Length: 262
Length: 265
Image (cartoon, rainbow over all chains, first blue to last red; front, side):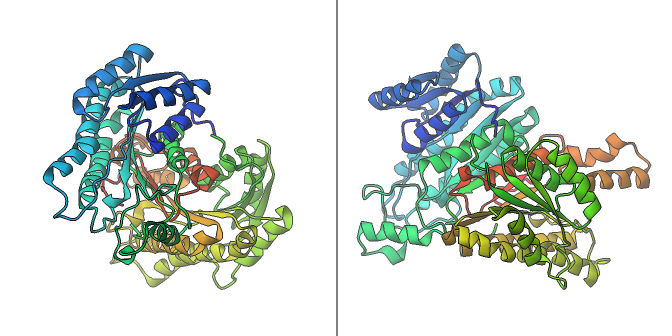
């Protein structure tokens, strides 16, 4: 399917995380020109060189792209280099886990910063350009905790729910100018590692991390963890010309993990 | 994006016109062989001639998925297996949209919707399951109108039935995923199909207004200020049925130009 992304300019935040880099890769394969944003200089250089090696045109910007003070600069540098911006991928793998006693308000504020305020300012800085060209896409990556919270993911649930509200309301604002805003709700993406695994359901308490990981895979209808590529494919489709009547929608990429009917 | 659909076999119900025909065309374009199913052989033949003009293998299956007594589902699938040897994709799309209020909805009206859309979907799923299980791979896309999500006083038969289809979608997705069969839903609304054209014509007739005025109710209601095309829905169906949607299971994606303003659902 021709996605119509050739020559389009896409800015991706946290583009050196597993999911961020997979999104950059997918968009590059479709011919998009990339602005990859990341705060780790070495990682950013590595990702940029890898993508360039595959023939992609890449502008790496070293920045914490989700610090709202950076938004204007990121969009300005994108316009300076490519003359336009077509796709904004608001990606962050920030998560805060813990019970109410464990999570101080500063940690919640940090998550609000990365998942809401930073994206808000980036969308605000990009909006005039997107509206002006009467075409554009904003794709927001949202944790599955937003719709199915567990007891130790209160902060992620709270902020994720707000992200869904952001997607829907922003889509109503920008849609009349043919700027389509959508969400991708991301389930367990692997491969799981002991470093990222968390005890989050009662049935896993007192089990080893390996047992928890196997248990999670068994819980998911598709019987496996997702890959960063699974998420990237969904983002590429929603960023494309082929999603031209999808406005304000959310797409769950979770292997069937979320059981609610609506 | 290579959807990985080349050489796959798709069975699309309600495919002699509108959404179903556009879905069949898109899957053909992606290299799939397509069986189009509808009630009337003559309209199927016309659609098949039109579709195959663009290349690709098209077969017709004349069957009424709402005929629950006749139970045409196994024979319909068997005819696809006889011709193509396998069935990789089922697109459950057939179904009318019956409007009615609490005052004028009769049991037969609701029964007709349930037979066509709920039992029809279920019958087709049950009929393709054995082949998909043997293959260890299958994709089922249920097309479910947004009347499932948004209550209208005059859409009792269709809305009630579509909600049941959403439950069917989620239940079956969970049941079949471990066997390599992915089940997903695509939820359109405000699409320029024959159905909407008929509704616009009715408005023009009953209110004595021109087409632009009669259509305004539909176009103004969407964020994008226009109706969607069957081709746009077909693009989404093709993606959801593809190898590129391998971790999408039980999900439903709204394609409605922003018509429904709900944050969740």
